[in-house]
Length: 252
Image (cartoon, rainbow, N blue to C red):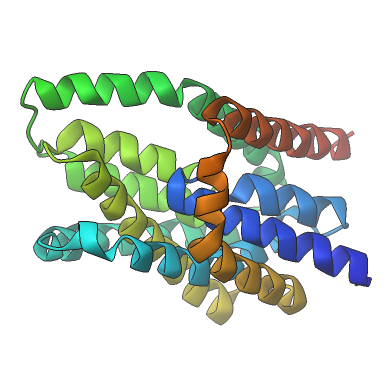
């Protein structure tokens, strides 16, 4: 790994850590960078999951005030996130790599669509909260499904989670976002332990992403908030589509 490659991975980790704390699509920064430097897709995904885990924890710590009073909710739903992450990890390591290479461009495309329509989702969630929505019985199952998705491939996991939580919970959006961060951190930490035990990551890449995501968890969120929402979404979508195109072209 050249110094320039190391710097690029570190900077991608910083951006991913910050974006994950605010929205939740940081993988669309780090994953394409690893692909561009020649890492196989499965190795890139495993290394990325391990590297982003520390940043997810720092992002959750940054929202600790909004997590007050949600202890029981966090414990109950985090158990489902943990089970989902293990399910996703098992799928990634046991399905043929060709399945991942074919499925991930579709997942990235869906993630980009979610990012584009995120303002509409947020507006819809606000209307539901004003209408007095309550937690539905399918919430734990939805959190488990989001955990499975995040354990398999983490792109836009946060957007999926906040959509599920915001629909089911009648609570302040900042508290919902804090809960989203806690559950995403659970998924990332569980997936990281799973992949460290059973996977074959690139440790230099994982370490650089980890260092960057820790910085991003604290400082990157502030930088991300200074960008206009349209510009931030456009940047993430452009990077994501580039990664999807690269994966598709590699299959020919």
